[in-house]
Amino acid sequence: MHDLVHDLALSVATEEVSHVNYDTRNIFYGTHHLLFSAVRLEEKEFPHFLLKLNKVRSFSFQFKVGPISKTFVDALIKTFSYFRILDLNGSECEEVPGSVGKLKHLRMLNFPKKGHAEGLTSLQRLVICHCDDLGSLLGGMKNFTALRLLSIYKCPSLTSFPTESMKYLTSLEILWMSKCEKLNLLAEEDTMKELPRGFLSLKLRDIPKLKELPRGFENAAATIKYIKIEHCPSFEILPQWLIKCTSLMKLELVNCALLESLPLGMHQLTTLRYLCIMNCFENLGRKCKWGTGEYWPWISQIPVIHLK
Picture 1 (cartoon, rainbow, N blue to C red):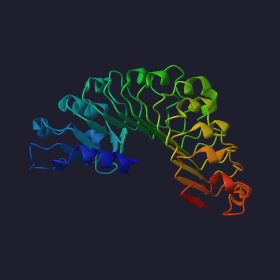
Picture 2 (picture 1 turned 90 degrees about the vertical axis):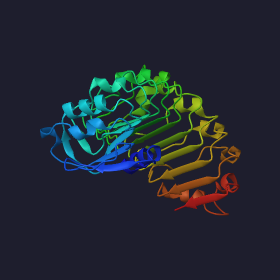
Picture 3 (picture 1 turned 45 degrees about the horizontal axis):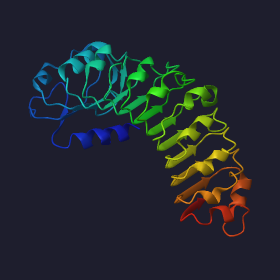
């Protein structure tokens, strides 16, 4: 996940990238992207030589830097008011200051701890990762009307989505969730009904309590193009509404040991170009067997099929 954010940062800041630490002496003042490397930041003030850089648009850590103080982050935000990308992954940040809401140009925020992100009406990508104590998503979600990608990774205490906030994410296209051991999506059926009709991509990985997809995803059946369910040991059934996914191009089902059937009418998915079924229930593999399986007439028109 950090590689993804790092690549996105570099794509925004292709003009000038500077690798800096507290010993840096020479730096180009037209720098657009800062890759910062240091340790024990909880004991250090924000480097004064960076205060002169008024063209910085993105910031990330070059490697895991350990604990970092709220004071450091607050100074970072106040210094670079034109941030497009702020990536705090790799740090053990106490809390993201409320001042992050003043970054009106911010397009992507990646933070590993709790915080306040209200006011970010231009935010397009939000990555929440390594939040051990996060039980529910931050209340400021209703302000993220421009949000297109929401990625949640390694939040072991997360149990649900906010019941009133999802309906405000009217621009959401991509939802990726991984390693959320306590998350129960079925407990929030009413919330998931609010998914926007322009929703495109769903990836769920290592969600042990996931037994089936919430019915609310049917709201996006006409537009969703990609679905991946991986390492979900309790996942046992694909919804019948899947055949309504008239734009679906790629379907991946990996390491879902209890999944043993496909929905009736799979042959109606005429846009499907790639189907991957790996390490699911043994009978499912036999039913999909090339040329002779029970489900083969349903899937034979798919150009690329990967079975194992």
